[in-house]
Image (cartoon, rainbow, N blue to C red; front, side, top):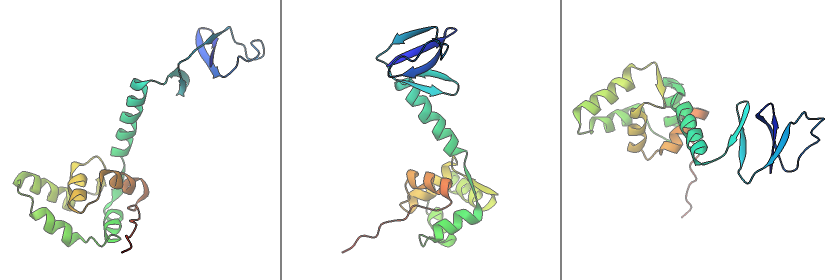
Length: 149
């Protein structure tokens, strides 16, 4: 792969050098590294870049929210009612965690994916963190494949 530079900055990342005059490239540099366009510049696609992308994606997902209605309808589609959720929460031995979870459940205007209560509730009903991410992206839980006996 080749990096094409223009005024000291990477202008392109290509398999073969392009016409330098037509594309206004000052110089070409061959590289074994993999680059990606990140915003308006090319950067090395390395472990640090990939970790940063994962962090940004987690931050984006944690900021997603649902109305209470969307949340409860999605759970109801899995035959999980409010009463069932509250009954399970009442079984939490840690009184502080129980109280905070109930307050969030009853008093929030919206439910946020980044709220730890979502993971607590999900775990009580076998809903994985990935399923919760899906829920907040799609306003529905993923369809569960029924096992044939």
